[in-house]
Amino acid sequence: MWPDAHWAIAAIGGGLVGFSLALVGGGGSILAVPILVYAVGIRSPHLAIGTSAFGVAANAAIGLVGKARDGAVRWRPGLTFAAAGVAGAALGSVAGKAFDGQRLLALFALLMILVGALMLRRGEPGEAAPAPGDRRTDARLLGYGFITGVLSGFFGIGGGFLIVPGLMAAAALPIFNAMATSLVAVTALGLTTAASYALSGLIDWPVAIAFVAGGLVGSLGGRRLAKRLAARRGALTRIFAGLIFAVAAYMLWKAGGAALGQAR
Image (cartoon, rainbow, N blue to C red; front, side, top):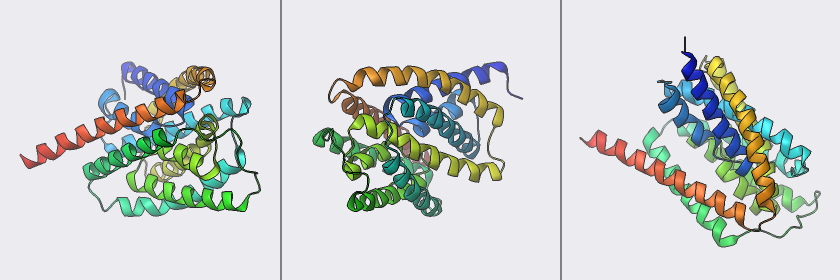
């Protein structure tokens, strides 16, 4: 039985995750797992991942409702991307089990740095997106969605950092709309992972509920800040890329420390 302090920490952690998802459409799983392991005290990585997957999916769904009310979600590209992503994640998760966990984190951090650099170099696309019925756009969405799903399943992370750039590249969505639309895929991928872990009994439901409750509050703050920054061209792109670089540096540091510990 967890003490009340752990549930309070879980709620605060959920608030941070909800804030990140509502603000930039990513960072959920990467923030959630360390919070659950190091702050809340869940010792089993698998239990932390399962609990995180449910919490992130629920927080993403909460953020999605707010973004949809604001009219920022582009449903056709989001659902197309998510459908292909779920199929890719199922395949990628099988391959990921054959790799060492610390090596996976290091490889993912390097991939994040590449994605962040490409986003800063490309900047934001124009405001006009392709027509909803554009077959070439749908084909790109399916391709990017499947690849993103494979990478997300392979690395065991929700994939928000990959989904946003993927939507921008495939459908030419402005970053504000891409961040909002990405929550469709984050919700779908998170629920897929959570269902798998729940069947194995690897979700701490009281902690997950506290996590989601905190996320509801955090998403409100992230949504308001995102609306303010949307008027400033390039601000969200720089914030998103900066968050990518910061988390990637932390992951490389942790992976390097683990490698040194094993060498000793």
